[in-house]
Amino acid sequence: MLDAKLVSKTHPEHQTVINISDTVTVGGQELLMIAGPCAVESLEQMEQVARYLAHSSVQMLRGGVFKPRTSPYSFQGLALEGLHILREISQRYNIPVVTEVMSIEQIESVVTYADMLQIGSRNMQNFELLKALGKAGKPVLLKRGLAATIEEFVMAAEYILSHGNPDVILCERGIRSFDNFTRNVLDLGAVAALKQLTHLPVIVDPSHAVGKRELVEPLAKAAIACGADGLIIECHPEPEKSVSDARQALSLEDMAELVNRLRPVALAVGREMLQVPSPAMALV
Image (cartoon, rainbow, N blue to C red; front, top):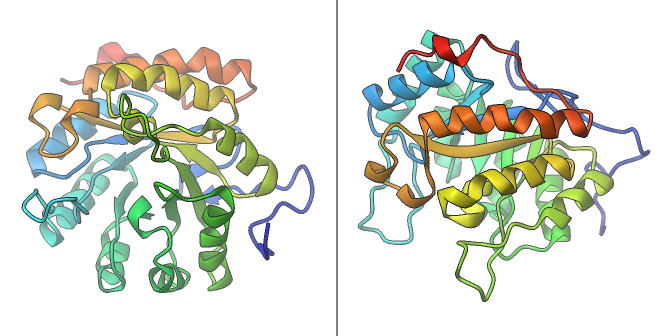
């Protein structure tokens, strides 16, 4: 695998466990569940998401505040206002948050307000950004490029580690194909391969892979079955009204139900999921 000195596994049991907060880790026996909307739209929206998911096995919230959109006329995110919202919700519900950083200039602000920094597929090979993230001092969620090989993906992670940051989580989110029935093609073979090649945690984003909410659950189950260390899934209080990626977002109710239906799969492959009070206690 080229010269991946820091990312490569040195022996079969070599597995890195990353501390995201005082209570949340990834890479160990317990699976990491990350959920939330594609974009932070308002404090009220994120309040509703956090209040509901606090009674599920979701350990971390996602929400974009800097949005890389294909069209320059699409919603670009709330930027600093969105970061303030994420921080307020994180403190109020004692739940860590992850959001995307798109440029070196954004790192300082995002590090101040978020617990983990996400690098989207479009920036997987933005090498100057990866180098800067090596000095960020926070865990990095690195998404696979939409046409990146496994080797290119691994070497992108190597950039971050080689510049001082050992806390990198790899995320398979689908690769581009000739078939447009699904948004992308989820490469679960890559998940299995990465677990053999590297010691880094590997999670899966089925939402961006398929782009259709009805296909998220089966692929989420398959991801856990093939060895993923967690999932990142889009959900929204009113999915059809989401300002971004509405078609793939689950409702909050469906998200909570999905997590419960993942438990038997996790147990079957020797993994655990966070135990929480009965969903009947959820505040809608």
